[in-house]
Amino acid sequence: MIQSVLVANRGEIARRVFRTARALGLSTVAVYSTADARMPYVDEADAAVHLPGNAPGETYLRSELIVEAARRAGADAVHPGYGFLSENAAFAQGVIDAGLTWIGPPVDAISSMGSKIEAKKLMAAAGVPVLAELTPAEVSASDLPVLVKASAGGGGRGMRVVSRLEDLAAEIDAASAEALSAFGDGTVFCERYLATGRHIEVQVMADQHGTIWAVGERECSIQRRHQKVVEEAPSPLVERIPSMRAELFDAARKAAAAINYVGAGTVEFLADEDGAFYFLEMNTRLQVEHPVTEETTGLDLVALQFDVASGERLRVDPPPTVGHAIEVRLYAEDPLNDWRPQTGTLHAFQVGTRELRVDSGVEDGSEVSPYYDPMLAKVIAYGPDRTAVARNLAGALERATIHGVGTNRELLTWILRHPAFLAGDTDTAFFDKHGVGPGVDDAVVQVSALAAALADAAGRAAPVRVPSGWRNLASQPQRKSYRVGDVEHEVAYRLTRDGLVVDGNITLLDTSPERVVLEVDGVRRSFDVAAYDGITCVDSSLGSVALHPVERFVDPAHQVAAGSLVAPMPGTVIRVGVAVGDVVKRGQPLLWLEAMKMEHTIAAPADGVVGELKVEAGQQVEVGAVLVVVGEEA
Image (cartoon, rainbow, N blue to C red; front, side, top):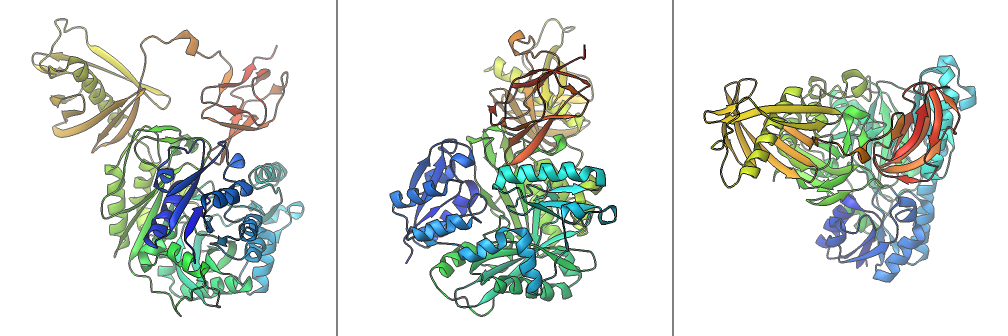
């Protein structure tokens, strides 16, 4: 009988498992890295054990440290969550060898699905449809486009789409190097790439007595860098082609039975618009998007994991799916800047209403570090009607308060209101077809900057409330500049006896350090302003804007010499492709950074010669650090 469970994970999934464990009367144990010492999940656990270090390789991927932490804290079971060691057969065996209950599938089942190459062979033998594997050396022009995939791991890493035969060798090398770094196994293979396929998966749950449930399908087709952004249940495609459901469920049960599966797992398929589908992989763990299945079935999948691990039987059939649920992943990243991860202090984080489910790993004051996945939270809406669910979710995201770290919030609301999404036209090429949204309009940025400047003026004039203050030199407007991304926005205004004087049809109605009320083109609008160190956040019905005040006089020490390439985010240098003295061409990759589980290329901005190389592979760098200097050829 399980009494205490250690969750070998962090963030929102640790909190999610703790929630169910507490409901079952179990005590909880967290493990945490140095960077995570003040994260909410650590405080919520009954006990916590420190894993010295920050990077996953030093902490959450050290299986011996996790097992020792369970022993020290008196836990008698280990739940792996997802990611990290959740699909590591050696870790599962180590937990079992230590006399602990492993809340996951059998070790042999994990091993059999650990290699995508071997998994496809097993599934084909079990009668599950698969895409033919292509040996990289034998790919011809007639096979293109192909997808290069890592045999081990997941999460979109070690994957490359290749459309030109001359690019194949380089992309295979890059995918192999990324896979080796991420999973310790550089083996890759190729398969036919379905550019407009649908990603559809089936949740399975199996007990130790031979019962296998196909609990429901999910569609997760909208992805960036082969990682999911929006997930929903049921699938719009399957709803359009109802005969698919029985076939998908049958294939998923066959897959689970073929490896004697026990516990929660997900069988992933790639489907075309006509309903044909092919096995992709089986995730031998709880999936990130499991909440949409819970919302539409009423099940607690984590509770079922505990039940199955304790030897309990499932009833004969799972409950039916009712209604519709949509989950969006709120990432700390900039979709308009190549999905660049964002780090820093999350000064305010208030997302959702009572009608929504929010599975979050952060709260007000949390630090978003560069060491881990950039997902802050999953926001889930449920209801009887898909269109209404999408509308409610988009509205809740717009009204959320998220200050201090940039996110993909605007992208998510744009997706949820996009005609193609509402029509259920959501294949894996969604972003290729439609882009990533327009971002915040410049006019909204400008009026938000004005509100920020007026709130700042009100704060400096307190306790006298603007606009009662005024300047004698009406010809000298007050000016203030803010930066959004790489663009600087200047606002100029005068506060006179008659009120606000500014370009455009704008009237100041009221102002304080926290709120500014303007009439813009005849429409009254309120702007909530929150100023923090180095950033001012403005929220209104027009959108949310993060503004970085620009100093009037730049400290020369902060200037960077021409030709210097600096780190766009904190991270780890994983490869260096040049040496001092090398002649490089514009766009040529010079080195690669890894931050938040994503790889970023630093390329030459122009033709030239590498004059200085400031870093080496394995080195940690902070944002703004000079990496390499490229000068003109002599």
